[in-house]
Amino acid sequence: MSRWSRVSGLSILVVDDDREIRTLLLEFLRDLDHRVVVAASGLEAVEAVNTHGALFNLAIVDWQMAGITGRDVINHIRTESPETYIFVATGHNAQEVSDAYAGPVVDHILRKPFSLRSLAKEVSRITAKRARDAERDET
View 1: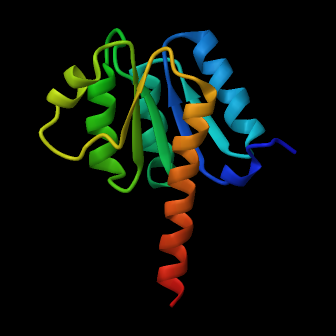
View 2: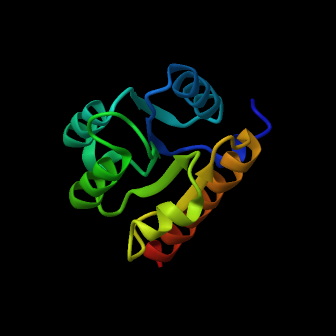
């Protein structure tokens, strides 16, 4: 069992056109007992959202991709699955990404290169929030 096992249980969409990053995130998040779907492009991400939509608790989206961009993917997720948490992975300045949206569209910005520890911490935050919300809904 991973030392990060306390952050398990999410259904996560990972969108990145870099195969090494996709593979690393897939393996790391699966080791944390999350269910992970990967998309190598914006088009694949849109198709995954159309197929699985509201099943995703979290999407980790590369900001800059050819064709359908990270911004396009995020807009699609917000339309089809507004409850999905969205993390943007980017090498760009976080302010550039923040400026692209005038509202609470993105839940967290992961500045590349980011550590797996920082990712685990943010994923843990989402898991804890879901647990609190579930407890509140039961009362």
